[in-house]
Length: 218
Image 1 (cartoon, rainbow, N blue to C red):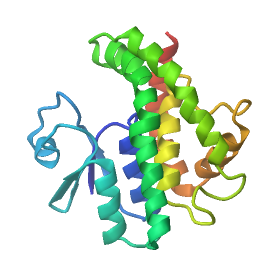
Image 2: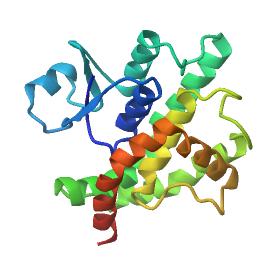
Image 3: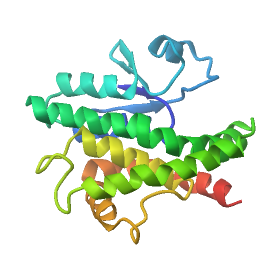
């Protein structure tokens, strides 16, 4: 399976971890805004990442891709089949993508992606706005994350992958998990990071991460 995108994206990482959990062979391909590659644009008509090409079947959007992969490769099941579990899993996926992400990505794009990667500048006022918004959601998450196990109980699901992927991206801009301020979040994130699939994806990301962190600190 071809996965279009860059590992700094929490949405690309989400798909990478889902695929790796399921033992799906995949390779990363370049894609994103401004990338003219016709294969990428065929897979993602809106020009956004992630997108996949799975033996000729193309699809974009991380949640859509995760749903597709969970249906095609049902073991291990990452989206619960029972109604309440499925609903809660999709809630956390949405929380990560559009609530936690809405705050954190303002910082990411305006302090790192825009000025240092794309060389198009950034809006510091938006970055500060994101910093002001972020504690509301990280504090809320600390209040609900369980002290043991996973977000939905005993089973690791897309909920854990989605939220952890966002926190990993926030670490690029020094807004990752604060173990002193949010110990339950830190313990849960440590459990996620210890999973073999997460560790395998993290190892692939490590060299890229070191280069990016050097830019952040420059």
